[in-house]
Length: 415
Image (cartoon, rainbow, N blue to C red; front, side, top):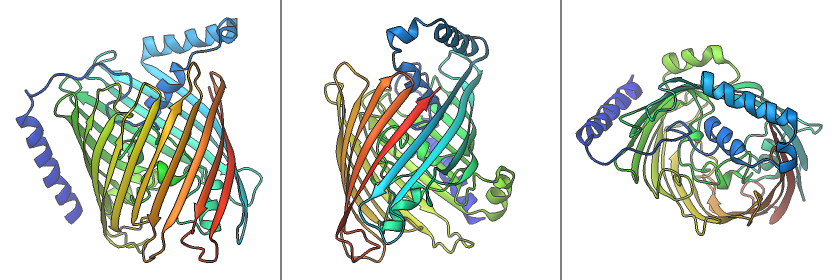
């Protein structure tokens, strides 16, 4: 019971601090996404897809106009926003001791159902997402390609062969005029921990080095809870915990794993944002995490710290710098630094990204480098095609390989 007691003590402290400064600072502006979410979360993804303007010829089609009216009526009358997408990725490595290519596809169905205080700052919503992830005509899925070629990392994060999974089923609620928020249920901690503008693996970088920090052994989706407190419109803190043994394949085991096994992943983050609207792009934060020993998995206790900074320039450029260090916990690498930039093309929805990273794997002294560049082409509102190229130097788990290339293309169709 040591883990729950530690969390209870830390939660009490955070709430005491929050209560003591209740009168400090103004309310945050009204928002369209729940107050604990990152760019890859369900509400943020729905908002991003709907914000892309439809081509004039498509908007004029009667069937499309009727579809949009139906969507708007569902949101207006019932508070229900629905989304779905189909994602496919193909990657090929220039050299490998095993399979050198991988393809996978993911179909996702998700939604955000506002049930309390619809249209107000302090609203409550039920968020849900179910997925099917599988291989697409190759022996391995893209998530397995990095380990296959000896890279201490992932050349693709979500494209696995996990099959059907429940990745979100949580309640989120804002309080104190959106200055405080909670989230509880089946969560994915990467939706709100250590996020920045280009963290979404469905629309931006493929490599783990530029999405979830590779020094964080983020657990699979399972039961968890977190809360956010905005001290002022510019400063915030987030803290929470999640089941360290989350398994989205077996929703019936969520409660048993959380309450009986009692092995938890803890996290806290403090940061600065330019404004609520720019909380992803103009963000500087420090996050710390800890993890209980995972006895069945044979993973020791772990802890770590990360730093992230990004700042938008001229509404088009988004440079970023991220770093992390870990001690135990089963992270893929125990120290990493990454930097890069994203650029939104003028007059278009197309986007270009470039990143460079350095890392050290646990127990290794060799430096491992990874570079990635992608172009996200959006020919129409509901379709994205993103060619991608990665260059890996000194893959930590393949000493005989000095470097290799991974080229790929990703498709996303949103509905």
